[in-house]
Length: 297
Image (cartoon, rainbow, N blue to C red; front, top):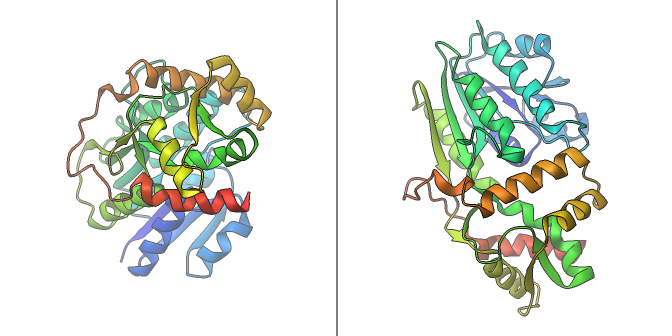
């Protein structure tokens, strides 16, 4: 039996990872601000530490006596400086790991984390990899995940109001799209097996690469609108739309920068799809989730 720490325990990947670790009889410590969302986990036996992931003192307390960490970089939509917030978080985690008992870390990263600049929302993940690579005596595995299929769920309102699916991404650009439950499954496998040494990364890419034109047809069919079309928005229009939806200006800027990097082929330049980094959930299967959210939105 080992003691695991999970940062982001109430999120898409963290929640499933916590359940999986508890099911195997391990001790699990979770860090989360929202106590309402942690109840299902503490009811199963997880120990909740409430606080901020940028609190180095708190992190050292949580890490004390633990063996393994799963971590990610939280999304702060209202941050006045999104990248600075990311750096503050990963810096605190890196410092707390020094001289800790933790010897294995699985960290959620992203396609594009190989870029030294111009990566937008992913730049903080590149910084995380850079900082964690300096940690001596700690084995770290980065999961460079594809574009979350869950990102599309925020567009159900657009489909209802405007009758289109739209982002600033090129309509005919094939990108790897992955369900977060598949990322959680890959993370859990490595967390349980501890089958990695040194500093390394693996890609987690979903069932195949899709264009957003394909996604519009697949999701449109699922909601009874097979004629649903995709529209590529100009970057500035997309930025304004993001802010109208409640996103802060700094994050909107970073999202646009990331999209530009995808469109220009920079984000997708590092990976090669293999059987090992291909995961099972297809967009066709995920369309059922999109349909449920669409009906209830």
